[in-house]
Length: 77
Image (cartoon, rainbow, N blue to C red; front, side, top):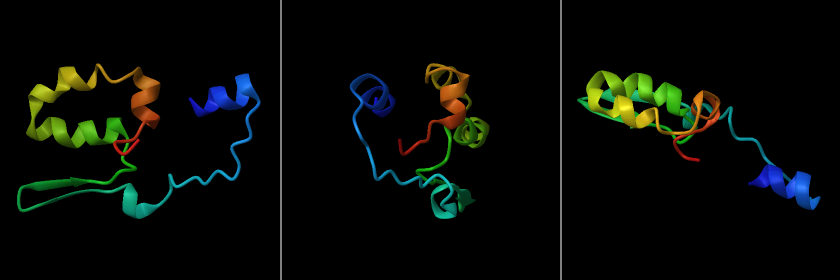
């Protein structure tokens, strides 16, 4: 949507801050049977961990956008 604001409506969106490299948001951890997934974890990376524990999620993850979206889209949006 933001891309369309810029390209179609010539809307200025500055300042924009990229938080994709914040380590604290991009981690997946498992401890005592609990999986913690940071908001910056991509769908692809989350699926790799979750599919091991909940195989039934496989078909559902395939419904989230295309491969490019799953590789860049994050759990936290």
